[in-house]
Every structure is written in C-alpha cells, then in structure tokens.
Length: 124
Image (tube, rainbow, N blue to C red; front, side, top):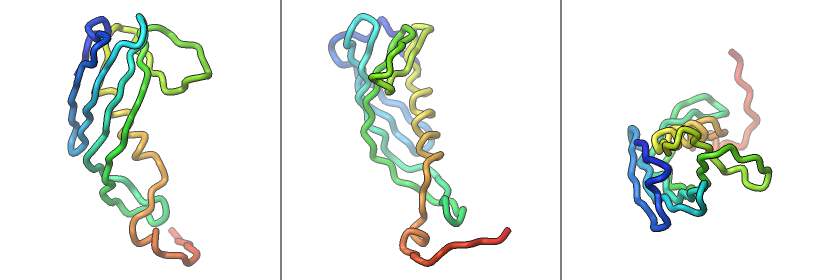
C-alpha cells in the first residue's frame, strides 16, 4: 500500500495493511512540510526461531510503533527512527515488512529454553 506524501495533511489519516497473520494499522499526520509522523500498532503473530535450540515457534505481536517519515534526505543523529521516501510515496507495506523482518532477526527463546537453566551445548 502506497500513499502520496503530499496527500497526508495535518489531520490524521488512517491506514491498515496486513501481511500473512500480521496486521499493521495506525495514522499518518503531517508534522512539517517535509515530515510525517506515523503512529501505529503491529499485531498478530509471526514465526521466529529460537536462538538457543533452533526450533521454530509462533511469536505473538502487539507492539506500538512511532516513526518519522521524510521526503528529503535527513542528516541528523538526534532521531534514528526516520525513514526517507525520496520518490514522494509512503510505502506502508515496506515499513510493515521491515518491522517484521527486524523482529525475526532478534534473539528469541522458545518456552522450553526459557525455563531451562542448565548449560546448553549442542554438537552438530
């Protein structure tokens, strides 16, 4: 789902996107001429892998997300939660995929490994 950057105004514009079992909904609101604030929530579930034993399991998602979107190159170290859309289109699906892939790349533990305190060593 793409939304033109210039079509987002100072009143909040709602959006909803979904990929597989992950839902992404929230609002876009113009902050200044070249900046939009995205306030959203990721909910649903996605398959992740245990960082300890390697088993796949479903991770439930219910996460708030606040980002700044810009249609210009931003050179600042003050705010690292900025996504630049230089083509004038805000790509909601791209943001959703990026957030899901970021969650998948984190370190996760399955319920078995989370409750197991013994030293873990596995030979391959």
